[in-house]
Image 1 (cartoon, rainbow, N blue to C red):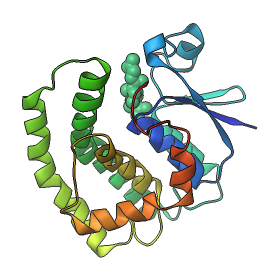
Image 2 (cartoon, rainbow, N blue to C red):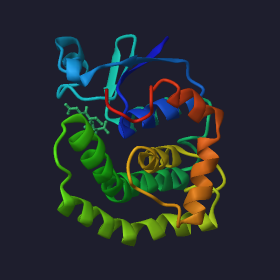
Image 3 (tube, rainbow, N blue to C red):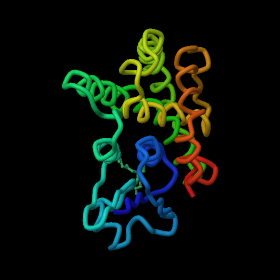
Length: 213
Ligand SMILES: N[C@@H](CCC(=O)N[C@@H](CS)C(=O)NCC(=O)O)C(=O)O
């Protein structure tokens, strides 16, 4: 069985590439060019009803939604990326949701405004949206900082998909003005994941990182 992962360089794409690499899964990355309409073809719409990415294909099995794909990849692997007892799994879900619906949502504003709107569509940045994001991040980043001051990873000693998903939001700083260098424990955790062979493998598929092309 070969897992095929379809998409282009965005935080949601990197979540699944990095999870697949950490899970030790053999996969093929298939780049789709949004500007060329490659995500709205009948073939891709058959995999994702809204023509979005990332998507997974494994024989006759299709999956979309990046977190669902990360959970699946972790579950079919021999790793503890999404494992342990019910409480550990609940905490992985908690940190995944906290990142997705709070911290990551606001870091994502940098990606949307600076990469999608400005670079890809050549539109002006919405300064009010940026201000709002900065305000929420001032309140929310200390929560991650405290958790990582007390634990090596978000859920304790072992890396989980919550870290991978969180990392891919923090990785937005590489292509935007978003910064977190005044948070030493987030920086320590980020550098640890970035120096891993899995990061090297996952990001080698993306020419220039999370830049849409
Ligand atoms: N909640 C979905 C979001 C999917 C999504 O919005 N994908 C974006 C890129 S990250 C996309 O395909 N945008 C192109 C479009 O909507 O045409 C996930 O986590 O996978």
